[in-house]
Amino acid sequence: MTYNEYLYCAEKHLKGCASLLLSYQMHEKRDKHVWLELYYLSGYILEGIVVYSAYKLNNWNPSDDIRLKYNLSFTQRTNLDFYYNRTRIINGRERIPSFFQNRPPGSLSVQGHKFQEIVRRLLKPDPSFNSIPYLGNGIIDSDVEQLIDNWRPEVRYKYIAQQMSPTLNQDLIARLLNTCFTIYSNHV
Image (cartoon, rainbow, N blue to C red; front, side, top):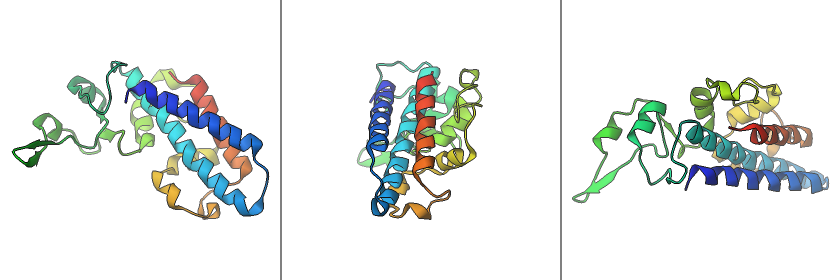
């Protein structure tokens, strides 16, 4: 998968979420589940934009698959790779290549879905993102920022949106998706 494909996925999820939100008919029993699903998808919107931005900003070859290709100088410069670790099977035994064993603790990986760390360590310090919410210093509502900071893929296992803090509702989800749209519209 190329980093451009992450941006295409983000755009697809963003359009789908916006359509669902615009066409949604209030129904108290379904509302909580809909807000939770939109919150879940918003994380993948942001992750797609973040992965795209981190690789583009750091001059990854756009035609190289970020899962299959390993670029030692890129990883040394950014501390980012697709995988937590890269193993090879040699004579039936799993081995970690020596160049990967030297990655420092806390190395960044796309595989971990912790796009927030990639934002904090690679994107926020870059002046390209100064005016962009969350990726830089752009204006963002504190409750929306809290949702983004606390997003994890495991949110898909939650069944009641009221268990979330802040409590998910149409206004909060609309502001979250608006923030995603602003970020998407202004990415690198």
